[in-house]
Amino acid sequence: MKDKIRSNIIVAALLIFALALQIIVPASGATASTDESGNPDPNFHIYIAFGQSNMEGHAPAEEQDMTVDENYLMMQTAEGMKTADGKKKKVGKWYPAVPKLANSNTVGIGVCDYFGRRMLEIKQETNPDAKVGVIVVAVAGASIKAFDKDQYGSYLAGEAEWMRSIAKQYGSNPYQRIIDMAKLAQKDGVIKGIIMHQGETDAASSYWTDEVKKIYGDMVTDLGLSDNIPLLAGECLQRLQGQNNNINKLPELNSNFHVVSSEGFSGESDGLHFTAADYREYGARYAELMAKVEPQYTFREPVYEWSADNTSVTAKRVCNELPFYVEEETVSVTKEVKDEMTEPDPIIPSHIVRITVYTSDDFKNPAFTRQTKIEKIDIISDPTESPKPDKGDSSDVQEEKPTETPTIMPTSTPSAEPTEVPNQDNKPATPTQVPTPPKENTGNNPIEGNVNNASDISKTDTGTQMAAQPTDENKSQTVDSVTVMILKLNGVKCIAGSKKITGKVSVSKAEVKIKVGSKAYKKAVVKGKKFTLRLGYKLRKNTKVTIKATKKGYKGIVKKYKVKQI
Image (cartoon, rainbow, N blue to C red):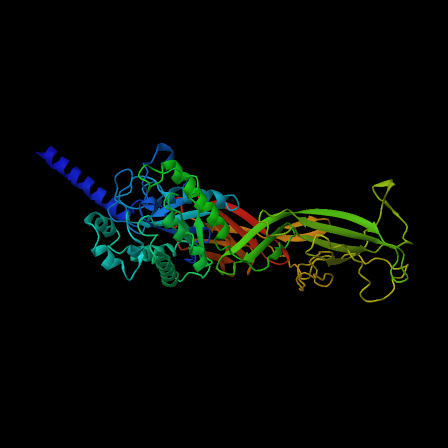
């Protein structure tokens, strides 16, 4: 009896645990990311697709059609559909774009399947972060009127029950389902174009071209799209010349209308549908034309920012259409130092000029150009000074180090040449002058000889002057007689499940930028030495986090972390 009671308790506990998992774990479905501010992903390009059975998918899918790239997604538009493993799909959610893309009447693959695949291939040739999503609403055998928001009801009421049952999967209003799904999709990405394959039923009719124009105009208005969104219409099989004649008139109505040729396709024996091989090629034709005509992002002129220690350059440019979209790339810098003797001058005696040339690496983004910065330091030496023997060895001679007067002359163009800088106080240098030795730094004054010394340096690229103040918390590093203060990061916390990243910088009021995974850098909020970046999503275990801290007068730091599970 006790064993039976114990067994019942265990079963009940397992049922409760299973129920809890259903509540906690969301239904499976692909996710489309937004950034921390909730903005749509500018690299997620979305396309609306509508039409009849050739858009629905009329050819049986083969093994080669059942594998898709993880960055090719479809939004579930029809009700009652299931995943390959039998789970119910949710309308308005993203899933891998594995056939069937439209509804339960879909046989296998259609025009849209390989449109999306080829579209992704084209985009990832130049943008590895690109993703493609499709919104497919198609009703086999339907007139163009089924997609007119003012005529769909009266039209469907007069059609056969089998057609109404397909439309019922879209709430019996195909046009409104397109709009509802597209509005959800606009939260995740950017609508770049519309494709259609409809016309076997009534493209030969006189009203057809005007209907297409009206439907396009309604979509652009209802979705708030720009006035340059393209619509691509595909020809029917070549034997349907009456339909194709009207389809080819569309570009005359609107410069955004384009026609995809069906030349060379054999089609099925019914004279209406394409073969699986046709669909694969036809979809690619749609994609290659869309890539040529879809609107491209335009950007403001790039801005370049050098790190405080001249070891890296960051290029940025802001998108005109999506101001929240900023392309950003950071590259390393190489340094070349050479000394040159100047020609004698009545004002300044012959002396050595130390020229330091900083050159950035090439940027991957072709919109960004290689940057160059040049620093010149005049080294004034005393021509009458006799060499002094080193106390340690009378055979060796060690010259006293002259006082250096640095002048930085940066330029942002590779072709810029170093220029001579006259003596700023216009006083002649006396040959018998003895160089002033560096004063001992007490911690209260700018470090003598530091290229960041505010009294000695003019930076023409920023128009600002700065002095490096040492603190007990920062290590110093001397390179080429230049003392640089180094920033440090402490107490960084990036924990799985958390929606924020926190930590401390070794000095107050530093600038901290944080990059999560492949997302763009975001500026953290800094209060004193503490920084916080709040996210619009939860951190995932093992995600890479890159933190970059900079401050004028200090050597910046870039450190990488991994999100940990606690």
